[in-house]
Image 1 (tube, rainbow, N blue to C red):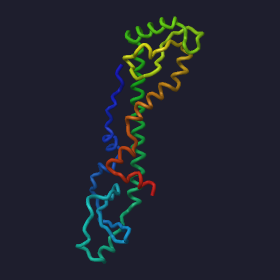
Image 2 (spheres, rainbow, N blue to C red; image 1 turned 180 degrees about the vertical axis):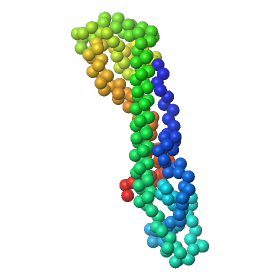
Image 3 (tube, helix red, strand yellow; image 1 turned 60 degrees about the vertical axis):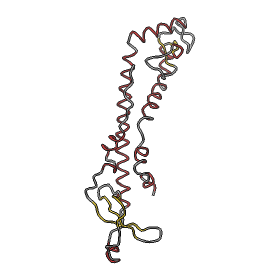
Image 4 (cartoon, helix red, strand yellow; image 1 turned 90 degrees about the vertical axis):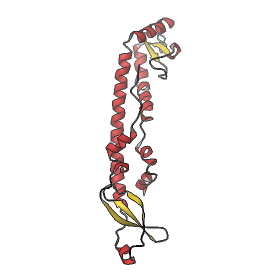
Length: 207
């Protein structure tokens, strides 16, 4: 059995959601920020995503009157854009994970019909004398994975004979948890995706 690929293109996910990293910053305006000493620092701000573009702009060519007339850096623009972007990214991330989980379930069901799996199942049932190891009363008709670490290439000691009722009880929670651990760990959250490029992105939302 081959699980769906775990090669995650988080950058494409971020680009599709409108990450500030991928904004072309076509509309810019000179803005000022006031430092801790009360001195103005000039930067170009993107009027679309609110990101500070490029390096600090020298104030030397400007008079004090001109510096005073320069608008303040719009923190609200940046924060509101990040808030909307984070929501779009998370929606796309969940949708992609759900797609992969559905694909994995379909692949798993196909695997359970293969001659290779049926042969393993029969060996496990014979080993347990076809008695369910969950309730020890009902006839065992299925083989349950105690781990999915080697799915498709299982060791027989990783499989246990069970009846349908006991197997269904296991699968109500165990297989979904396996899929969640598999794909949620592979697709970074928006904070993880942005942190390497924008160390202050998450902090901006808490201000």
